[in-house]
Image (cartoon, rainbow, N blue to C red):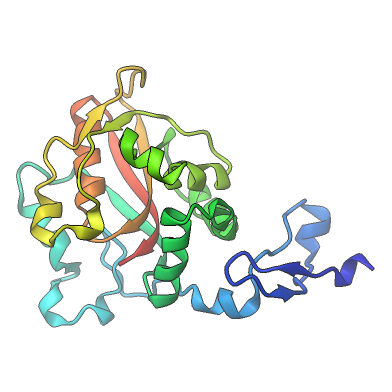
Length: 240
């Protein structure tokens, strides 16, 4: 019977029987493709959160807090160059060991279907955010060739949106290999895409997989703001 149809979890591969709710029948929602055990390991950030980047402040420790903000956002907002370029970042989950391994498979082993595991939460998140277009954080041509796809574009597709390719990226060393200081000094990495169209006056949603220091999204946001975008938000799967 269809009520007891099993499927394989997108994250661990184990067979399980998904819960079937009324929304599946009447609203056409897709069945759950993540088992209960893996779903429990996808931990959502809980308050109090940094109002700019969604970092859980209770887990950050006093030396990483500056009032009601995290230390990194305090640093960015002190900079005349970056103050106000990013309105807010929303992250779906905390970057724990489980999610780190999942995103490694997603990004570096080409496991594209993992993006579907985040689909429901991505769709719920974009419903709450006011924006005109979703902009993927781009990969350089070299990095795109290595991975086979842009993970940010996959996330946008799973959110039910069409990407606006407003940015290009200059090839550089992998972010994971860079120190925090090197990530902050990312000048010139992003450029406005020549075929992006007019972004003036628009509210844009940057999409990426992980928010760490905020350097990537802020450097991208700054290029878009300089091109006339009114407001920049960002949505990431994980808050490191």
